[in-house]
Image 1 (cartoon, rainbow, N blue to C red):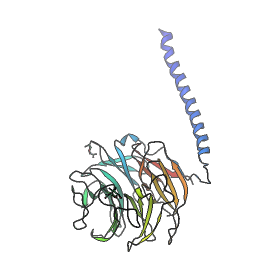
Image 2 (image 1 turned 90 degrees about the horizontal axis):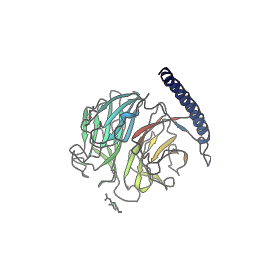
Image 3 (image 1 turned 120 degrees about the vertical axis):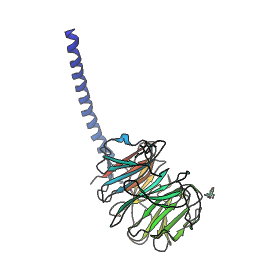
Length: 341
Ligand SMILES: *[C@@H]1O[C@H](CO)[C@@H](O)[C@H](O)[C@H]1NC(C)=O
Ligand SMILES: *[C@@H]1O[C@H](CO)[C@@H](O)[C@H](O)[C@H]1NC(C)=O
């Protein structure tokens, strides 16, 4: 009996030792892997690395994570997810701690955007649901109180007065309150719409097609400080650029997207690079952003290859830390990549 009792602790000790050795070996391997993966072909340089400490507890992702938005001012990260019986919006701190979740009138979030003005902060969501709250673009308080509904809830359409959407994909709101909406994600509309602070049409571009200013699934939109609107024209495998004041077409990039169309457009905080997600090839492309003026040709300066079936859908950038957050539908998680230098 006494011998048997003594064997237990000894076995546990041996187990712990083996586990420690395993960890040590594993971390050495990781270091070696890091070293080699920082060198890629064609002079391409690794610019970001995965932050494995974000989030602290991944179990909070309980559905399909479609979108993510960073509130750099308040250090918050909002995640939109879909699924039955799951909270639709999760709120994390930028350190990765889970803070809150909410649901109110959110059916199927597609795109999400944080808007900060001098006086307040709000969260905009494009909802592609087909229930009574769907086909809309909605504004919420940071804690999930519904503040504004654009579109005709429950009714898909193309009308501008009253406003209607069909699977609105994403939006960008300027500090002035003027906004740009891409509509949509495979419904009857293929358009980019600019609205005034009081939600009236300022200009509209696009219809279904491959020509200049036409779209096939305008999937993501952003605006740079030089007055240009950038649209991921997903199924035409190109990015189109417009003048934000007039809506005039300024140019397009297509040579970088032969393998897969662009799903996201987001600038880094210094506006030097554009981050583009490719869902089908599980990759992020980092493109050189042209300064004010000519769009020119696109150039990929770096890539982040994700695991198979990760399916990166939309991304956002923390303009303070430079971190990229990736909403991955396949992996059902949001990952954070931080700049290497
Ligand atoms: C949201 O909805 C889900 C499922 O319907 C529920 O489990 C959850 O408690 C709700 N509320 C919040 C705040 O997440
Ligand atoms: C757009 O046009 C293509 C053919 O050019 C057609 O297959 C598709 O259904 C159209 N989409 C819409 C929303 O009208």
